[in-house]
Image 1 (cartoon, rainbow, N blue to C red):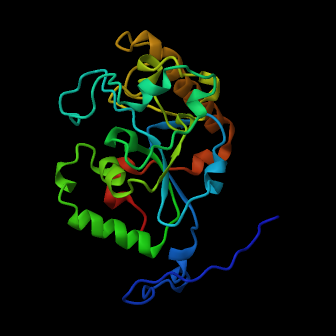
Image 2: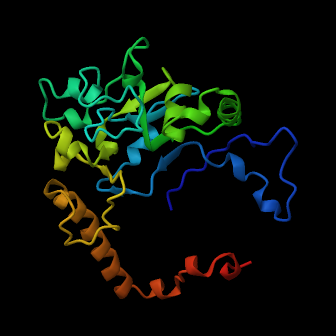
Length: 256
């Protein structure tokens, strides 16, 4: 089948190996060399397999920048998220825009302000190791700001991995509001993955709703088009009949 096998070291905890009933799981911790974490409120538009080959230094992660402009003036957002502030990456990018600006990664200088080091955790790329796992757990236990982070995961990751983030272009994590507040760099044809942040998700609002800003109709339509394609596929492919929705049954309905 053309599958290339790679021998890897077994990854075990400090207390020893797996002692459960299924011996086949003894080496399951070491089978992943690269993880690409993707939020469930995203829609992949183009192939992103190259994220598995992005060079990463040891102990680094890869992610796209957060948009810290706060154009909606949401009061509970961090104080350094200022509406279209000149210190915000996206405002810099809007000056002298190139056609491929959405695909251009920006690597901030180590001494740059926190806004230029803030990630959006919708996509995070990492090489899983026991050392990295222990480092993150230790950070969660000892970072004095953990309970004060407005965005618990991405603020922690932005702080913990400052100067250890390989930034990706927004093509991998195109935040929906950017279409409106940073329209100068938005290119539909460049987007690999759109991120439907905020509460007004396509699957929450009816397709023909009047509550949605007209500027977002097209990208919400992308999701509905994919939904209809999937529904048609389910009707054509018999194997879908074997898929049972157990979510409404709770834990009692789950197979043992």
